Length: 207
Image (cartoon, rainbow, N blue to C red; front, side, top):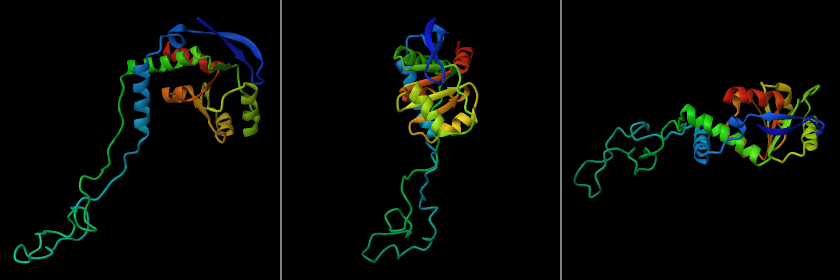
């Protein structure tokens, strides 16, 4: 069981927490993390791009000139790809870019990412973050007291609208509840700030 220091939102040490080695202390699997990141980034692509083929472009129903005797190349339509205003040959069409992963690989990738943050000493456990109102400056002050890096991920137990709206305008800072946590966001941050309740929930889910 790895022992990690717990801080309050003032940046002062309050206690320690033991994290399960089965979740936060495994040997990271680089291949599983790579697959998870590729899958996540692929799923972000909309795939809505679309071009018109010759059959979809309006016009071109009439043959431009007769087949033989003009000295010009034969043409059947003014909407063929070689014509101006013609259709697009082999252009992109709507498609899905998503790449599915099986559950075992997803779990292994998540545990590997969490273990990497512990090994790199980038995990910061906070007992709780309490804000009286939605105020960006309050979150900026808290992160400054915790001495976090510019790219910071804050993980809450459940969706917290006050924390989310207070932090969403801070460059490089992202807030995520445990059920929306993903490998890419974990690896992409330099400071991994996890509320104590969220850390226990992560253990429950992935232990």
